[in-house]
Length: 194
Image (cartoon, rainbow, N blue to C red):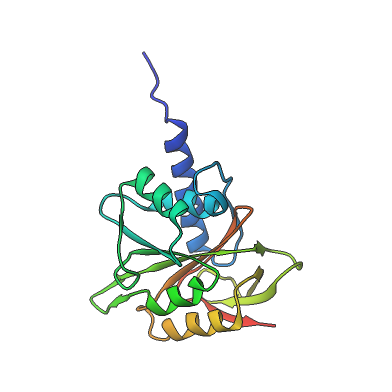
């Protein structure tokens, strides 16, 4: 009798999916993805999206970058949509603010149709170092939790708060660092910064 085994790609996608689920349930905790290749500098975000995208799920890249866009199209069978209609937005640099402005926030009947912004930032850490300290509160955070993020500016924080002022409507956010560290900020998360 043979025992079924998962291919390395399926195992990697399942591990990434589970890490994101854990991160969404525990905002501000640090997850880790081990970038494996496609997407160049975007590899950690591509790996995360590879676990979330499929034929019935859409995405946008802001500003557009061919390397991650083509890797996601090739590996997931997903479709590129305008940012206002996409289920997931992969954002970097000036595209983070653009994505937070453009992402759809669902409707009262279907709040789950709000988009998720995946923002590529220089670093994410659970201890003081580079970046701004964000103090988080809300569901899934026992009391308060600190996380340090480089590249998530005061403008980005204000846009996140503005977009999520009418929970359950809003936008979820995943901050992914270049080294594969990430943290999730679901729409009900409240942020204070030093």
